[in-house]
Length: 85
Image (cartoon, rainbow, N blue to C red; front, side):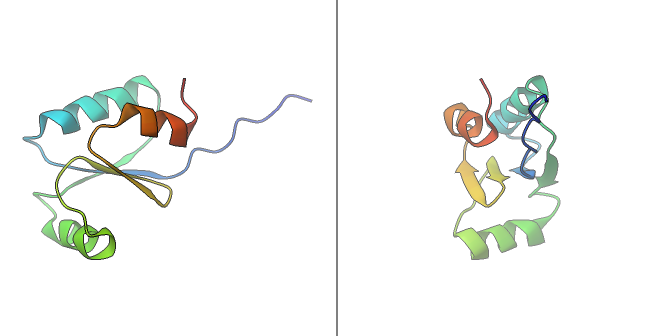
């Protein structure tokens, strides 16, 4: 019986249009076929405030992978959490 690939945890990317690292992270996720939901914190300040309150974090990019927050573009952490490479 073939083994099933584990289901990808939910990935939510908090980004800004003017953020170079956000663009690089979106490109990285897309190249690795990672499905994600993007929230632009400039266009949605309520989401930015909720992130600040719940995790005491601000800035971009921030990536929620399941219940884990990855601050910045940390490909090693993303790879580990998503089972990439």
